[in-house]
Structure formats: structure tokens, C-alpha cells
Length: 512
Image 1 (cartoon, rainbow, N blue to C red):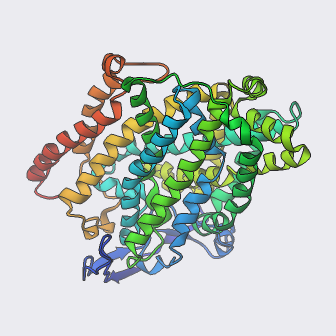
Image 2: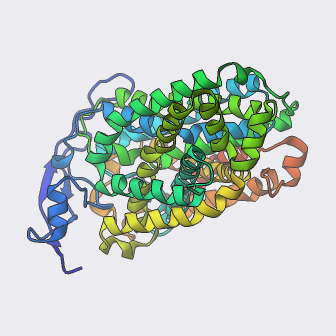
């Protein structure tokens, strides 16, 4: 990469006094005297990359953000970036799987959705408050638990997770665009259109993403309100629920956890440019309500639409022809005509914030998966991420409900174990002290923990996850008798194994 000049070795002294999450009090000198070296390789002033940077494109990769560059004090951006990306077709499509896939009644689905979304959103709400204190993206923070090399596994899973949400969102949006004039735009073409536009949003970076999401929720919310009004009385025509036992409901818990607890693995990416003095409680609440409130409402709407699909003949035919997107198209076009087509386009494009956010996150996770990619400009990584999502979304669109239920359940199991290890590391072994996450060693495999303790805890948890998991393609012997206990056992096993193994590792190494 001849366009990239030598690394800027500017070193600063950070004398930080962050606020306590619960009380808002100040902990003096929590990271006083920590030296932060900016390891970002800046482009030469005359290059094309420099011109992009001058026009607002974020070129910085996985390197920790030094204190003097953590200047974003628009803390409400945390709320808008999550709420806007959630105010789309993505949660509607996921919510429809609760009634179509799990056979829940609308009443039971709604109660479980609201409670579980807020409950499983709590880890992300806490973890995001660490990012302003450290200037580190989430996958870099994870290295202080999983180590540089074992963290590659977590990075792979998180990258697949975020990419999976991009796949789901692009399919939802594409189905709507294809339903505007059936037979003119195939779903495959609509997926490509959505992802190319999302690429432009995602590669621009942190500031542009936050600016876009500050306003993009307005047309999305308008379109969703029109959809609810158009569906109206037909939403009351619900098919009777098929789920009646505790075994049936356990799968719903793993499914809900899969789409919410996984935000703990990426939340910090959207607050790492905020100063160490950022109000932690406010940021935590912005995060929690940004991800849980719109997701709960729209998942419930999706559950209502899914529950009515086989009770309304026209919806049944539309669903068999083109999935949930076609059902939404039938609702809007039948009731509202050409205006309904316009609303359908708005709904189809509502996933741009979701998919753009996912492209953005993946472009930072790829260097954690393969460290050699640190030399590749983030813009190129964003193009690679977009191409991969398109390639996966097109075949996945053929069996959407089965794909999404299996996907969210499986990632929920891993996220439960990995997030448990990270929280134990930070809260128990590091005493919730951000100074213990020394930015000087973020890329030093020898100075970082080995990660073997976390890896062992995660692998041991899978020894019980597999017999206790229940998906569309596999159900273990425990799950067949008691329901899907994979998530619960993932958390429990990771908790009881990580503590003693990590304690032994620290004793042997003589340091964290």
C-alpha cells in the first residue's frame, strides 16, 4: 500500500476521570498517566485516500482511538443509530418467525418479546459504556479476555452474526421492493440494489453513519404507521397458537437472545469516539432503549402479521409467493393502491440503516479475523463485506423463516458464553477498571492474556449446548425432553468454568 505513509507516533498523556454508571460520580485518576500511542497509519496528503478522509470518510481501522480524538459529545447519537437501524423491516421479519415458525399465539409472543428484548439488551447497555473510557472497538476490548489469537474465533462468529443480520435485513427489504410491481424486479436484483446503497453508507464511516441515522428513522416510522393502519382489522384474524408447553417456549428464549444479546459484541463500535467523561448512565439508557424499544414494538407487529398469514386467504397466497415482504405488499397495494406502492418502497429502503451499519461493523471485524488485513484500507474491506452478504442473501431468501430461526438460535448460544466470559473478566478480574485495558498492548499477543481460559470455557459450554439445543435441523436429546436449554447452559457452564480456569492462569503467569 504505497499510498499509506508511516505510522504517526504521537504520544499523549491521558488524565481521565470518567463518571460512575450508577451514581454519576467521578472516579479520580482512574487512568491517570496512561500513555496512548496513535498507531493509525495516516494517508499521505496528496493521495486519493487523504481526499476521502478530508470529505468525512473514516479511514481509521481497528486501532484504539486516542483521547484527543474522542470528541463526539452528541451522546444521543447512540440512541439514534440503534433506534434508526431497528426501525425497519428487520424486526418485523424476525418477529413473524415467532408465530409462523414457533407457533406462538400473538398474546404469548408479545409478552415474551417485550420482556426478553429488554432483559437480553442489558449486557450491551453496560458494555457500550466501556468504549468511551478506552477508545477501543468491541472486538479489540475482547482481546483482553480472549487474547489476540483465540479472539480470532470470537471475531469470526461476530462477523458472521453481523453479516447474518445484514442478510436478513436485505432479504426483507428486497421482498418489499420486488412486491411493488410483481414480476418486474426479482428479489435477487433488489438485494443487490439495497446492499450497494448500504455500502456507500457503511464505508463513509462513524460520523456519516451517525448523521444518516439521525434523520433516516422519520420516513421509516411514517411508512410503518401507514402499514399498521392499512393492515388494521385484518391483524385481529389470528390463527390459534400451536405452542402450549414449557418445551415449546424455551426455543423462543434462545431465539430472542440470539437477536439481542449479540449486540454486546459490537455495541462499543458506536461510542469509541466519545470522550472518557461521557455520562455512562445516559449512554447505557440510550443503548438499551435504542435497541430494545423499537425492536420490541416491530417484532410484535411482525408476530401479528405472521399470526394472521394463514387466517387471511389473500395473505396466505402472497406469503407462499414471496414471503413476508409479499404479504406487506398485498396489505398496502390492496388497501392504498399506488400510494401503497410508494410506502412499500419506503419500507424496502428502511433496511439501509441496518445493512449500512452491518457493513460498517464487518469492515472493522475483518482485521481481527485475519490480522494481515490491517494493511488493507477499510473501504476495500467494506466492499468485500457487501459482496459476501449479497452472495449469501440470494440463496437464503428461498427459505427465509427456517434460515432466520436456525441462525439466531445458534448465534445466541455462542454469544451467551462469550459475553459471560468477557463480563467476568472485566468485572471480576479487572475490577471494572478501564485502566487495566492498556491500549499500548492491544496488538501484542504476548502481553495480552493467552485467551486459553476463555476458549476453554466456551468450548466446554458447547459440550452441553449441543445436546440441549433445538433448531430446525437438529434437536439434541436434552432438548427433545425439556426444550431448548442451550442458551441457559451456555451461560451457566461458561460462568462456572471461566472463574477457576482464569484464576489458575493468572496464578501461573503472575499477571492478567
